[in-house]
Figure 1 (cartoon, rainbow, N blue to C red):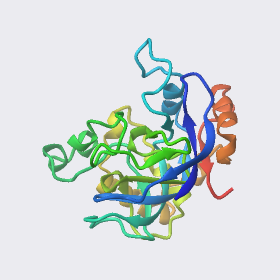
Figure 2 (cartoon, rainbow, N blue to C red; figure 1 turned 90 degrees about the vertical axis):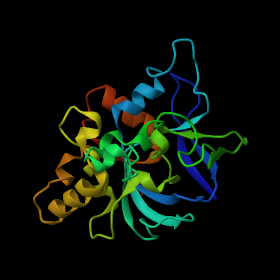
Figure 3 (cartoon, helix red, strand yellow; figure 1 turned 90 degrees about the horizontal axis):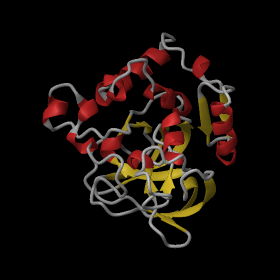
Figure 4 (spheres, rainbow, N blue to C red; figure 1 turned 30 degrees about the vertical axis):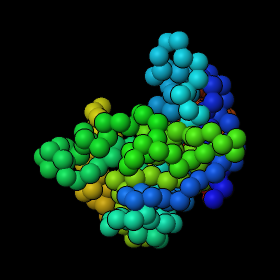
Length: 239
């Protein structure tokens, strides 16, 4: 299928909003129609090349940005037993297998499945589902690529259930005040808990949003962030 995304082709250059080709999910993967994506400064560090080797001027593969997101499951690949089409989900930029030593010890935020978070390709088999219209493979930040209208991710990288909470509000549940790896979050239990608190009126997510932007305005959004005019911005794919 064809979709649109904000793609980084050269470090220091702007995000390029363009169409791309998305292959269907394979075993252990899900296709998600994105509803919202958080404008995190980590993606700005990636755009500026702060996480790249000093001599490297461009990503190894053109890269779809975004690692904080929420959306609705459209399709699942073979062997997926958790997420189902129609589920509202939050992306977890640290994949959670639920089976390794760390997950079993209550420390899902350092799950073994998250070790290759910043490497290109799918975590399931190392190949690519996202392709540019020029035929080149596209990487996706943290195996998520939330700055896309649609993305394919590992089933281990999404959490959520059928709920009355809007996907735009679910996206805000990625945030915490703890300065730790993923806020020491255990996504399998913490995300449903946060959704319950929001539904009960005990977690005020709407008040956290400074401004919402369209995908086409992503470069302006990051200018606003750098200029101190934006604290918590969101790409709202419904605008």
